[in-house]
Image (cartoon, rainbow, N blue to C red; front, top):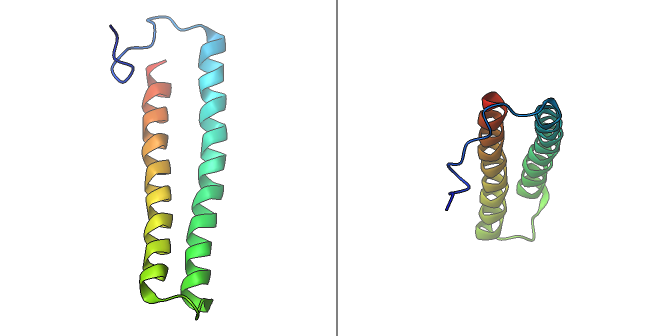
Length: 86
């Protein structure tokens, strides 16, 4: 049984597969930039202007925002590696 994390892309992927991967990567990068902007700006706004939130809630929001950005970056690295293989 093949492990989806270690299976290789075929030796000679079709041009359409290459094109789809490039398109997926470009779309993901655009999404990643919007996501990072939203997470960081929301975190900053809440930190500066949310007087009603306690420090733990503010810190939790900031940590979650960073977690989302870090996960998006990790997916980007995986997509880039896949794209380089085809």
